[in-house]
Length: 77
Image (cartoon, rainbow, N blue to C red; front, side, top):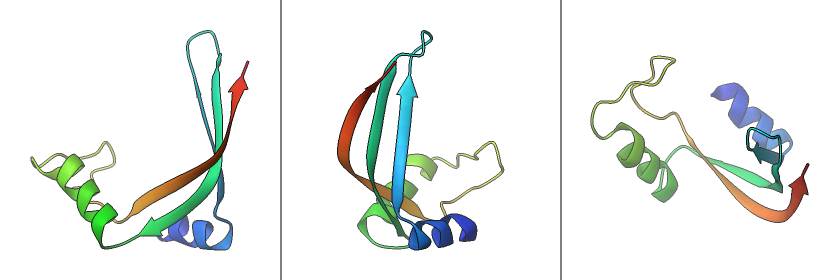
């Protein structure tokens, strides 16, 4: 996650694209912030790791939380 944190600090602009099986969806543009403690980090830890879950990569606790403030949404077709 160090690379992720550095990348967000260097350039916080992000685009999230979500689509269905027909490749129709949305593109969301925004700004990312990375947190290693505090409210957002605690929420991720409680929500995703409270029952001893392990991610596909073997993580047992979050390294950070990424919060994205959406500034624009457009259709993706």
